[in-house]
Image (cartoon, rainbow, N blue to C red):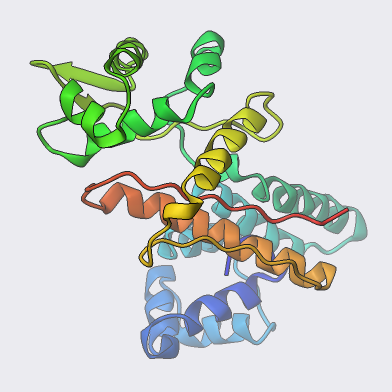
Length: 269
């Protein structure tokens, strides 16, 4: 579970321990060694009888390999638990709420390696084929030629050549001896950007166009649900975590072909 689903740092630590091999057996002793304290102190923290200091909290965050935003959130949880007057508690509570809201924006979960200029975005997000061609160049260590791209997508050569020229100019791909290699690994449109609707529409239309040819190895799924507001938030977090996991996997995978993942989750009104 994401740390942003917790408002009690002890609950987060207990949950994290339970997810470790062996149910977290021995983790408390390891954490005590990292903090250079007796394991009894860590046990008292978990029993809500003691609190970590700020110095200890940052070491705990490093031990769990938290990101910068997760570390900031964890430190706020510790400070909120320790706050001794209402004003200070309210101060950290507001920071926690703000961080939870920020965590719901997917763009805060990704590191962007390339920010397109405004005019570049207009072109890149105008059609699905710019992104598809760019990703396809990553599917071979030797890059891809114009002819290979034309054959794979069954696309007119003129369109492919123009797209490659644009992508190369934007440094989203790199040309080496008439073969094209993928450049920076990710582009991203923040929530609310006017081109985001166009981007979603392009790929959903692409999915609809391929509906009749969907194979048993592929998947298309649509479901209308009736659920509580609380469970909506829980499911949304699971999906956001899946998207982040998918993004992380893309850094390790050996590219072989181009795929598209579309996810929609919204209240029907």
